[in-house]
Length: 161
Length: 365
Image (cartoon, rainbow over all chains, first blue to last red; front, top):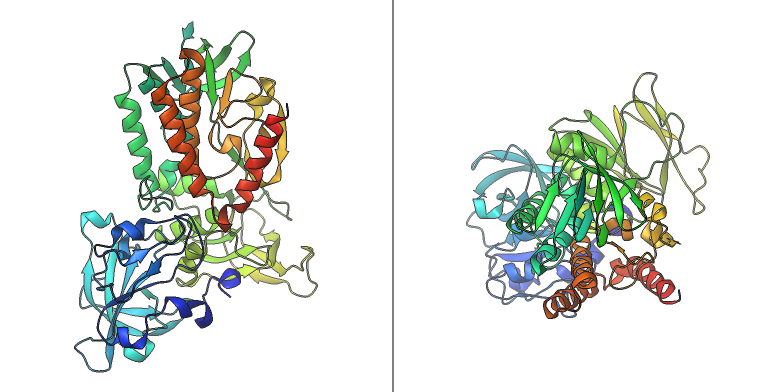
């Protein structure tokens, strides 16, 4: 379990996973924030107000999947690096894209290949970097988008450059 | 030589800087001393983004918050004097204290003092724990994030509170391999998003484990870990070795309270707050009514709550000299409300219990 290992189980993640119908419509955020900690920067980061906290700052963020446009504005704002964008409507057949925060050096270059890792840091496959966003406003948290096999989109959550 | 001030603040971390800005902006002559060369306390080592409310610095890196607090202190400078490399060494009777800089000893005559001395790091008893290469997490952060020096190449982290988790992440950022994180409790102590962050970078988290001994003659060459049962007793035949050249202890903090004891403030032991703390009321005033407290010295918490408590102490110290002020009350009310929300929820349970106990005991004396 998450609280013993640092690795959330599929059961623990069930409520933060977008439904299949939403995934089929294109990019959407997944907020893997499963504990009621006092933190709320994601709420104000969202330009379409899709993220809410019902009972104040220590609530878990609730993402309205239908409102979420998958724009990724919340990704670099999360101090827990716990927000990911998945896009199952990627133009390459059988592939999907995953965007994640990356704060290590070197920042990977666009079109380079990196190791894709699961939630325990285990190597799953190589992945191509298709976009890197690292503007001053992100204050050194780069957002890296990788192209991964669609059937591994729920398992890949980190990269090793 | 001697100095005269209205508000005398000891410690230039998040609590002390916030208290100084508020006291000076409200109109009190304020003197702040800090024993290090650079203001900001532990914030100057915090390269990660802070949790908390986006109204108050959440999502911003600790070092950026330190710079912001220092700017605020500078802009209040006509009423505020800051002495770096200067330690407060003791209180005398008649509202006087002694301060020691690198060149001189001076006396400070004050009307109200706010003591924001922070905390010291706990150690852990295990065989060979005095070998070179065994550090506290604060020491590792100072080496790495202030001076740019790696503490080692392969490090073992002991303790899974937020400090252990965050410093592990900072070590990875600095290019140090974290070979594992050991935690005696069955559950991870800090925020789980921090744990997941290092776990997916491949750091094994050994909950229900402890360190039995450090290996090596002249420096750390490894460590022996083992499982522990629910009574924290080593489980026989579960020992295994890890290879590392450095061990980092992140096993909690204890409030730094010598000055309160010396000023004869009444102390109370509250486990949830890290040990002995000066008894204080909701105005952060101790039983020695000229002395206020804020930050980790009042109970171990974190920087955002330290800043808020510092604001309350600064406003209340000002009022203790100049009388009631609408502006000061507004600052206090706002800070109290923010503290209430930050401490709500299950992760704030222990802090709430500890704080409530202090207030209850303060009310009964």
